[in-house]
Image (cartoon, rainbow, N blue to C red; front, side, top):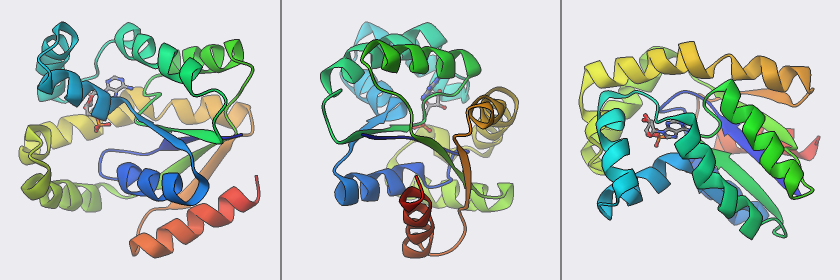
Length: 190
Ligand code: AMP
């Protein structure tokens, strides 16, 4: 199985490259952000709870997102592989993900960081706001907060995967095809 954590700050291109990985390697894509937005659209209790947090660019609680992943992993444990996009976002989530995978007899193959500098992220997110309809992309203060939350709460996960020799950094600047070529080169070494 090819089980990838696609990692990086907001606007790094995780969603775009997840789609290409799904097409190329026939993987199953889990985006906690997408799942949460569909809960909001369906006006579920979980959606209502998550919305106020997401609107500020803060993180939804670990328990909620870990709980969301439990059944999904179990359901797809016999697939060609899994892509985790936007999850884990804290070390607690990374540890929980390893436990959930282990319970199903599987494990993470590699964590791929899409490395993009802050000014480029801001440019991309503001451009994306025109099409995505995402309120958290439309407000510069929320964008800045999401990047700060990433730097403080999410970046430390890199160490977690480095210790397991699973961390790979990929330059996330260039055309989509160039960047995807870099991703494929790394995957070929796994
Ligand atoms: P994303 O679509 O990955 O940019 O996520 C949008 C928002 O959903 C984030 O700013 C968080 O508020 C929330 N979110 C998504 N994934 C997670 C996660 N793994 N842990 C906590 N909050 C999350």
